[in-house]
Amino acid sequence: MDIETINYISEEILVNIKDIHRSAEAIVEIEKGDLFFGARVDENIVGYVHARPSISHILGLYVHEKYQRNNCKIGTKLLDTCIKSLSNSGAGKIFAGVEGGNEKGLKFFTHYGFLNRGVGKTGFTKFEFNLLKNGT
Ligand SMILES: CC(C)(COP(=O)(O)OP(=O)(O)OC[C@H]1O[C@@H](n2cnc3c(N)ncnc32)[C@H](O)[C@@H]1OP(=O)(O)O)[C@@H](O)C(=O)NCCC(=O)NCCS
Image (tube, rainbow, N blue to C red; front, side):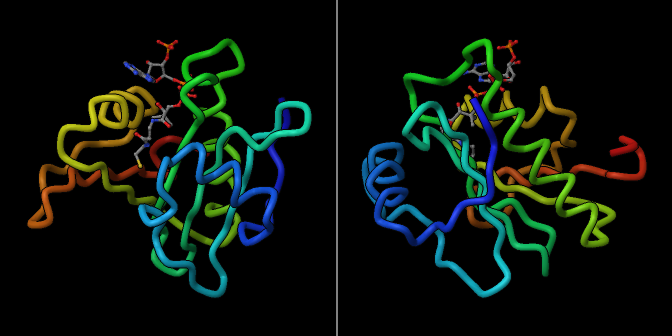
């Protein structure tokens, strides 16, 4: 398994992302400067992370069901790579939101070391990761 920078728009990736998401509509709109990293297993992108450096925000993180919680720790490695990149762009804190009821997401970010800042108006749980404190 390798983590690589991906061109989110490419057809190959879109096909796989649709599979991951079931519906491409769930994907947050892309802005110039957004970061994308993909996890490749053989020919396929089986997971990705999408972040926006201008607001130090993780906007999407998905690992295909078949590859979740496997020995490669794909979600963790995607997030490691993304956080390093945001840190290099000068971020001090990183933010993420997890939709209400998404137990996997809540447990994953908590386990990674993100602080739970409570549920916002939109029903998303707000997470925060302090780079200085965590020494990344
Ligand atoms: C959340 C998600 C990205 C995690 O990816 P992953 O590759 O399975 O994560 P990892 O294997 O790196 O997990 C690291 C740790 O997080 C915690 N964790 C991850 N998934 C978990 C789950 N389903 N239940 C409980 N804990 C979980 C565990 O502590 C795990 O370590 P362990 O397996 O040694 O116990 C994946 O489940 C996913 O894509 N879910 C659907 C989309 C989503 O929820 N995205 C995040 C919010 S946008």
